[in-house]
Image 1 (cartoon, rainbow, N blue to C red):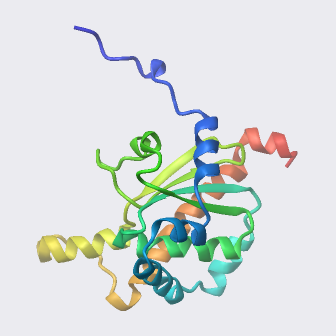
Image 2: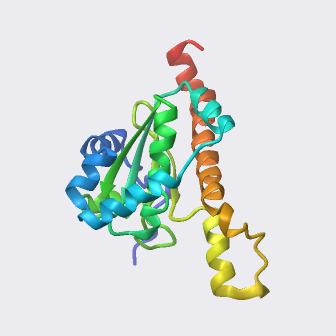
Length: 200
């Protein structure tokens, strides 16, 4: 019986793999054109029109200085993707440093296998990368605000969640995602390796 591999012996995915995934992934409109039905495109874009950023959120995004390639593992058919992925387009519009690309879950199975949540293939899952394609962290498939809403509906009042009101649900999910984008930007901005590279 073989012994389990030591952690140091497990090869981490290379920056080249993530660069390849990013380059194969598609911008928002091209992703929908290739993978979505007309009805699915309509649902994605209808949700996109409901999203707005506050002045403070726009200002925060505008302050980002490090390039952030972002690979979103998604499915055009997925309701959770409909209700989250268009948010990223608002972030990218407010910040030239954010480059968002969408990768259909079934196009690169080896990439999807690296982004499992709780052992399952979930979407959307966002892989944040450094400018030279080192993985920073991945996050998905729902934000805390969305999970609170689901928990309240499925687990009942015995599971207190601090649930937000339905009218605030989009704003809460936007805020949750913005925290993750800000977290990654701060990781990049404070990276000793990148500070040395950029001389700042």
